[in-house]
Image (tube, rainbow, N blue to C red; front, side, top):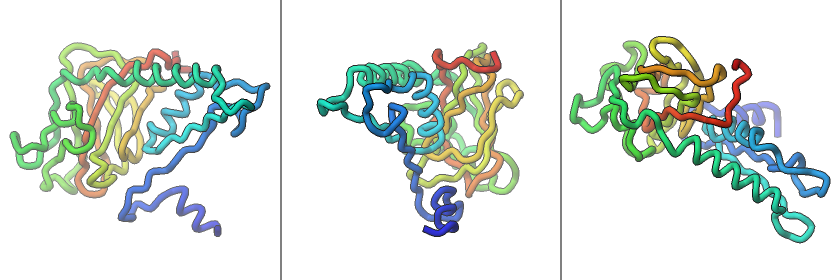
Length: 233
């Protein structure tokens, strides 16, 4: 494989016509195979891998090697259960669910079926907020939830209606007017685990600075990760 092709496959093509998510292959242990002297990675390490793979629009393929008896070691099974429990603990509850949402514009106006409330329902694929086509090229798109009272969280989740293509190229997250996170593409899922730890605020805005056509946001969430201990704290 030549250098150009390797670079192309590792970075993607913003002008491409197909969405092909990267696959992140990693082992639950230090090596790819089972060794008696090794132990599974710590839960904190596996969560870091999850945020940097699934949380960055990738597919996670977690290798769990069988031991010399052909079975999965008890220590690996326990770690997998811990990881499943942690993911459920973090993401089962969306703290933004009951918060009203508004947006910079809505395709078809109120009642047209593309309102910002769609980002808070349970369908993460086929219901979505769509801004007006007339807004294209006029500035930044945004969607905002207002919870009335302060909500404490340390993870922000954004998802696109991926069945209609990956569109967002650059975005920022604001809490009560202060920028707390930024990123490039979103795709199926982008998880921002906040470096400064838990924040509290009433209004949370996602601002799309650059996109390929109008952005289509299918889901938005605020979550609390009790396993995250920020180095800022």
